[in-house]
Amino acid sequence: MDTLRFLLERRGDIAQMTLEHVFLVAVSIALAVAIGVPLGILLTRRPSLASPVIGFANVMQTIPSLALFGFLIPVPLIGGIGNRTAIVALALYALLPLLRNTYAGIQSVDPSVVEAGRGMGMTDLQRLRLIEIPLALPTVLAGVRISTVNAIGLATIAAAIGAGGLGTLIFRGLSMVDSRLILAGAVPAAVLALVADGLLGRFEKRFGWDR
Amino acid sequence: MSGPAVELRNVSKKFGANARPVMDRVSFRIEPGETVVLLGSSGAGKTTTLRTINRLVEPDDGEVEVEGREVRSWDPIRLRRRTGYVIQDVGLLPHLSIAENVELVPKLEGWSPERRNERARELLAFVGLAPERFASKRPKELSGGERQRVGVARALAVDPPLLLMDEPFGALDAVNRRRMQDEFLEMKQKLGKTIVIVTHDVPEAMKLGDRIGVMHAGRLLQMGPPSEILGRPANDFVAELVQSAEADGGARRVPPPRARGEGRGEH
Image (cartoon, rainbow over all chains, first blue to last red; front, side):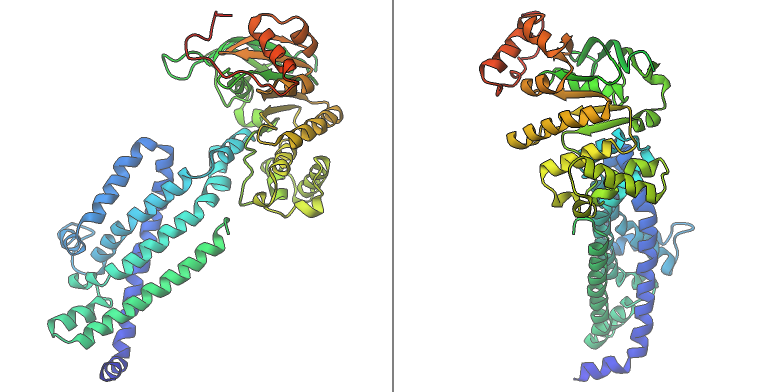
């Protein structure tokens, strides 16, 4: 009860930081989609590049997030303290699922459908637009969902480099050894992740052709 | 137009540097309105031959002419839109309705929605699928035979003068296969198109072809009307092929390909 009252008292703060959190995640996912999806499509056209590029994205995933945030701080233009660095780091983490799912989604399109498209005189671009992208869309959207849920969790750590968001409350709670403050950051972050998962899942169903 | 609809002259194709040629100096002419069946076992080179006609395969050597023009001088996109193409797996777009599938090429060609729609309904009726029942269904709601009909309707959409069919009835059970063959013969009369069919089924070739070209190991062994293939086979391989089909009451297919390297010159 005490914790509940505490959370209610801080609802202004919590709302503010939730908004910051959503902003961090939304911008970094948008950035990752803008890079990852076209790159994934490109890789299906240049299969020899697929394994080095996906390999690079894999390596990015294995770098501990706190370390990655730290590494990026001294990098000119994208580095520094604040949410710009955090957005770059979150986008790098989001890249892999997007890249991999776009690539796999297009690779798994039934070859006979692609063959039929070629045979009926579709140009490469028409085949991409009318066959491959629509058929890969559910897989691509699944990648967006995975990336987003991941990014919501990871973004809490971004507070360590002054990016704001719900992590701020968690770190404050840790340093003050106040579990109520930790919960004030952690519970909304978990709720955000669940809501994002549910919404994007619905989106996937709606735009999927294989209902 | 006078002159052949399709002509191949000494066409050869290899996939990979040291591989056995998939097509070895293949030559034939197809007259407008004729139905020619390319018959052979898998690996004989018949599908590759078919695909050189709409430039899905570029020959290493020799010439392919469609309507008197070398295919390399055709824009491949234009050539393919003027050529209906039906494949065994049909390849319907699973995210589109049956009508939308049939309307694809007209849409690419910039037809108005009304004209497209009318054409799709006309064609669905032509291949024996009631438009009011089928137009808005998805491919996965259809049976194999129904899907194959949609594939034919789609290939006919912009009324191409030339139709290429690769094992068009290969995925169907015996009963449906025979029925589709009968309907095809009827359809062929009404259409008057030049048609090239690839099959490994001897009775099917005998039934559908005005002429049959027997292929083996990348070479065209003989081409002629069914009566000639039966009555005057050019060599032992052709003779064995058609005799075995007759002896089995039409059930027999082309024997499987022999081991690599021993396929040629042993007949």
